[in-house]
Structure formats: C-alpha cells, structure tokens
Length: 314
Image 1 (cartoon, one colour):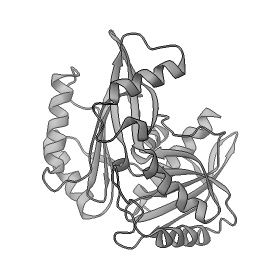
Image 2 (cartoon, helix red, strand yellow):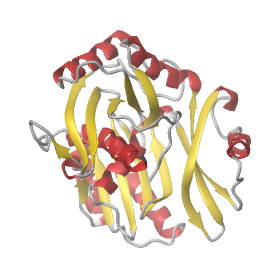
Image 3 (cartoon, rainbow, N blue to C red):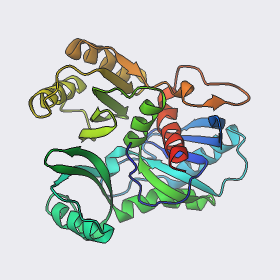
Image 4 (spheres, rainbow, N blue to C red):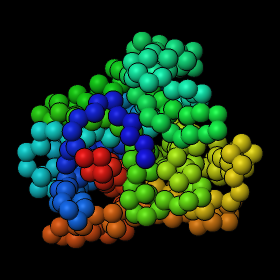
C-alpha cells in the first residue's frame, strides 16, 4: 500500500492527524498478535483555525491547534509524547501518477527525473517543494510512480504546531493514503478494482485501486462547483474507458455528517453498490475501554491505517 512520507523514521507508536475541523490522536502498541490501540481521542478545532491549501497560511491559529492537540492528548490519557507521525490534509499536496518505461535504479536519479518532469505541472516552483514518491502500479509498459509534491513552507507549518508543544514529527503523510491502508487492514482489499471516496471538510479524494496497486488518484479541494455525484460518475467512466474496468468490486466511503450521508446515497444511485464505512475496529485490539462507537470512525481511519502500515513495515 502507499508509503508516501516526507520523512522516513523507524516505526512509531503515536499518530496525530491535523484536519480542517478536528485533531485526532492515537497511540498503539505492537505485539505478536498485531496492533493494540491503547489510547485515542478527537478534539474539535475552531472554525478557520486550519485552512488546508497548496500555499499560504494553512495554520491560521497555531495556538488553537496546539491547544486542541493538548486537549486530545489529555483526554486520551497519553501523558508525555515526544515523537509522532503527523497526518496532514490531502489539500496541501498534489499527487501525480508518472509512467516510467524503466525506473532509474538510483534513488537520487529518480528524484531528479521526477522533479524535472513535474516542474511545469505544479502551481509553484519545484525548488520550493518537498517531493516524495512510491511505486503505485506496474503495467505492460513499465511502472507508474506516484509522486507527492507539497510546498516546503506549508509542510513546515503543520510540523511547527507539534514542535510548539514539544513533539517531533518523525513522519509526515497524507490522510487519504492511510485511509487506503486502513481499508486493507479491515479486509477490504479485493482481487478486483475498488473505489475509495474520502471526504474532508468540503474536499474530496477519489482513488481506484486494483488489489493494492494505485491506478487512479483525484483530489478536489472544494466541491462548490462539482458535486460528489459528478466526480464519482467521471471516475467510473475513467475506470471503464481508460483502465478497462467494469463494475467496482467494492466501494468505500470515509467521512461523516450530512455530506457523507448524501454522498453515500449518491454513490448507491450512480454505481449500484453500497458505499461501505471504513470501520477500523477490526484492524486492531482495543485496550481498556474497548473499541469506539460507530459514529466518528472516519476520524480514526487515517491514524489507524498509518500505525498498521508502519507496523507491517517494521
């Protein structure tokens, strides 16, 4: 599954997601039987405190975001945290699927080639960007590399919030990639093609995966001019016309609230398939209080997905 991160430290046990309207903290332990979630909590953010975007001020109220993280850590009884994985909104980065007939064997050569290819497609200078990548899929023509590009100063804003309360961001990654990992962790991977729809504060990411291979990725930072139904329809047409696909084997929806319920109904009408909830309760053992209730599971999907992924890579 996707392992895009701007930093690559040893496996860690705490994940913190900073989203547009909330922060989520999860701490988990690893054992022979798998992942055990020891602590988790969610704290709401004031309106406008985080404004995910490719450039400009993303953290408009650093003190409020820091206070929310402290509140979540206290609510989860997590004590002192010095190092954590940081999950950031999809809207702060561009993801490009770049085909290669032959992938350079040297990482530095691949890095340079990707930067050269991406420099004209980004709305900011590639010299100001942090670029990471991973193999997305293989075809008869070669390998598709997924490149994730974000402005260095934007990523730094999210890292700085953690630093202000004494936490080092040992890994930085996008939310949607780790929701994909959560789907696999709950047994959602299939031999055929499956669709993920990830909703977050007016934004949407749609991804098509063939087993564990990422075949398509599309993000819309605002849904004001294009409905989720239209995006799903366009994605289904691309799947049929360009990827040689038929019906999706499964469809997963990560999101909450009225927008998510409306999207769930629209997906059912458009595709004739139910949009399943990314229910991470089966991805781990839950200590003490047990697994959380059904509401708000979307807040846990990315953090659990990252911790499960990092465990599997250990």
